[in-house]
Length: 146
Image (cartoon, rainbow, N blue to C red; front, top):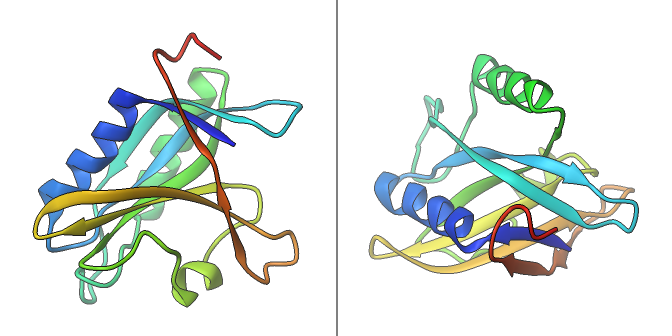
């Protein structure tokens, strides 16, 4: 399970809507619990650095990823996941997403149709990298409501 505030979910949706019809991406900063729950303390939007078709691909520049990792370290937490948008498509991981994912992270995908967010889902990869499984998203009132 991943826990986000309504404001964090809205931040992800707003980022996706503002970059439409292109994909967007960013990091999820927070903490892992012993009972396999992930708590997001910060949504860290990044710029799509893809030089390919940004409507179908998002690439996060290595220096931007390092900035997110530094921010997490400064706050004594971790990068716990990644989010991105699927313009005019489902909030379901693609084969490309599977090929480029890490088994430990949560992957939040927002579906954007006609410039409006219509669905937000989270996914976690099997340890053997064979597939993604849907992960429950729990909305909390504030980041302190762990």
